[in-house]
Image 1 (tube, rainbow, N blue to C red):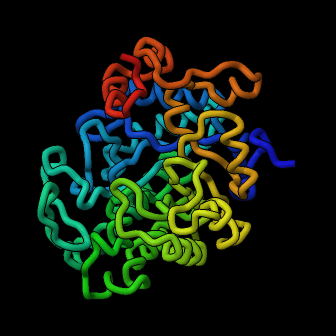
Image 2: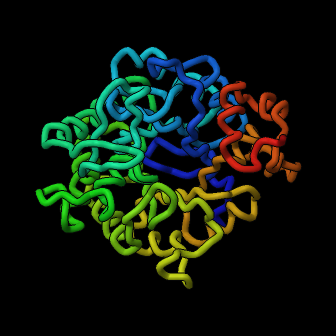
Length: 357
C-alpha cells in the first residue's frame, strides 16, 4: 500500500524520499534585488532537515516586470545564480529534492517594487491598472520562463514548477475574465491556453534535465477568476501531452469537493484525466496525517503543505512518530523557533488567526 513515507520516483534516478512536499510559500525574506538571503536559506533548509521529500521555493519572478511583492526571490538574471546554487546544495544536504516555482505576476505585479509598467492579457482599469501585452511582451515572457529554468538547471535544481494558478500571468491568459483578446492568444480555450502550453514546451527545451511541474487552480477561488473546471481538466490533458510531468493542484481547502460538481473531488477528477505517468500533488489546508492520507486515497501521489509546514519545520518527522504538531494560532516566538524571520512572522499576520495575538 502506498503511504506518505513511500518514496516517489519522479524520473529514473530521481526519487523523493517521501510524498510530503513543502508548498511554494511567499515569505518576504529575499534581498530587494531578488537575491537569496540568509533568512530565506535558513527557513528552507530547516524544512529539508525536517524531513520534507521535496522543498519548493516561493514564487520566484522570471522577469523584472513580473515582480509582485518586496522580498521576492528572483530567477530573472544570471546575478541570481550564486544564491540559487547555494540554495540547491544546502537543501540537497538536508536530503530533499529542490524545485523552484517560476512565475510572472502580470496584472498582479507591483510597479512600486518592479519599477516597470505592468501588463496582462488585456488592459484593465480599477485598483490594478495595466495595459494589454503586445506580441513582443508575450514572446518575451515565454523566453523569460525558459531562461529562468535554464538558470535553475545550472544551479543544480531537480525541478521547476510553472505557476499557472492564483490569477498570475499564466492563469490570467486562461481566464475568461482577465483575457478578452481577439487574437491567437485569446477567445477560444485553445487560444487562451496557448501561452501556458508554449511556456511548457519552451521550458522543456531549455532545461530538459529538470522535472517539469505546473500548478493550476481548477476553478474560481480568490484572485483566480474566470476559470471553469472542465476547461482546466482539458488544459491539464494538453499540458501532459506537452511534457508536464507533475500536476500541482492548488485547492485551498482540499477536504471539499468541487463547486461545479459538488459530488466529485478535484483530485479524483484530474487523476482520471491525465496519464498515470503524470504525478499529482495536492495542496490546500492539509494539517494532519489524516488530511494528507485522504488525498492519496483520492489519487494524489503527494501532498504539499503550506501553513502546517510554516508552523512545523519537521512536520514529516513529527507525524511519523505520532508527535503533536503546532496548530494555528501559533505564538510569534514559536514561529521564530521554527525558522521564520521577524519579517516572515509579520507577513503571516495577514492570514487571519494564524499568528497568535
